[in-house]
Amino acid sequence: MRSITRKTETLRQATAESRLRAKPETLKRLLNNDVPKKDILAIARAAGVMAAKKTPDLLPYCHPIAIDGVELEFDVQETGILIHATVEAVAKTGVEMEALTAASVAALTIYDMLKPIDESIEILSTKLLKKTGGKSSFKEKIPLGFKAAVIVTSDSTSKGMRSDKSGRLIEEKLRFFGVDSAYEVIPDDKDLISATLQKYCENGTNLIVTTGGTGLGPRDVTVEATEKVIDREIPGVMESARCYGQRRTPYAMLSRGLAGQKGKTLIVNLPGSSKGAEESLDALFPSLFHAYKMMRGLGHDA
Image (cartoon, rainbow, N blue to C red; front, side, top):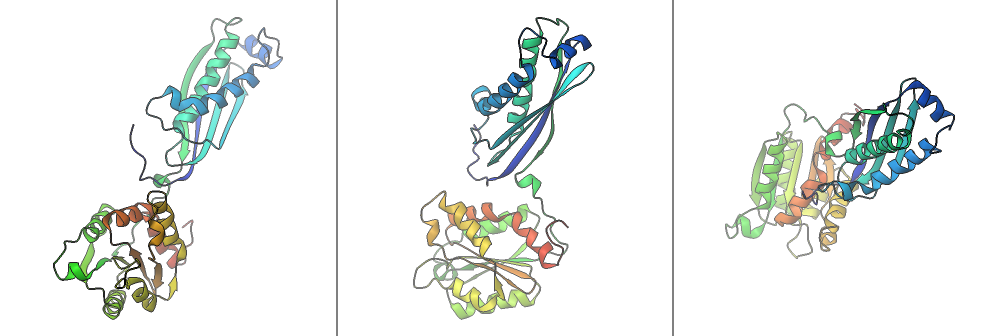
């Protein structure tokens, strides 16, 4: 089964549809509850709800998730029945299979209960109508001419005593989103870090991502250096990164990294460990790019 460990939880919704065909007289009897097996639609609704919750037991590669809602609607037409099943959950993976399963089992239930009086009854189709949620629903367009910089703050790396992994990993992640970045390694010197951040802000860099100096060590000063430069902090950015990391390691709470705005530039402090940096990147991107719409005054829906 495919790992979804690195995914983030979002509100997921999906709606599926099943269609049945039956004789008009059969459907009239259904509406009048004049059938051997009573309350067919009510039972079909219950069956659909139960099926949505049982989907991982039926389909081997579906992940078990906590479903927050299942709704089934039935439209009894002149020659058939239209079933809509909507499922929603706050989860790491989508709920389209749960919606399809709910619609399918509801259709099968109606088929089973009507077949004694209508041998011609037929399930015509089952299909997904729509789904939302996940990163695919929060795609962000990178502004033209977007400039980024990756700054590694480390005494040992700047002296050539240790190779850099985190900075290169950040570069790779940004390239995945179509963003090239400047790259620089500097020592853990507060004034030098502040001056370097200021330099990139002044040359029109849109995004500065630092790695290192966010912990509790005596030379961890990147946060203090960043505080001297930014105009205002954006607390939710690093709160999200720490929350994401804390669910994977109990040490994420010890990271002091912050994120802030300097004019039209965002500065984000990531941990120095490659694992911590990678998890933070998974938590923040691509959603972080949405900030540039807001900084231009376009709001969330632009």
